Length: 138
Image (cartoon, rainbow, N blue to C red; front, side, top):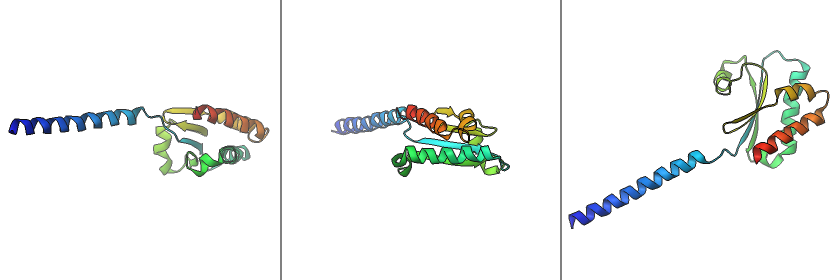
């Protein structure tokens, strides 16, 4: 009778262990759903730098209002001159003015497009953001 109880206990324990291991694997394999937009800048900024920030944030909210409302698309402006920004800048390998879209381990750098179009052709910049975010949503 003791042997039967021990076998049943061993079966239950092994079942839980296998289930926990499978849950860990599926959690690791699950793709990130959230897209995070980061605009890294310095304290001293020109008109174009400010336009990149404002246009990017405005376009994300206009193009994806429901995702923004649900926190699935976020925008953060990060001042590289502040000590509190060091960790995130290091994590994302950023050392200067940068506009990044991040989803899980995917990073899309749209800094050049931002500086080319935010002031001179905001509709083109909006189209670039839409193209890049739509690709990350797939």
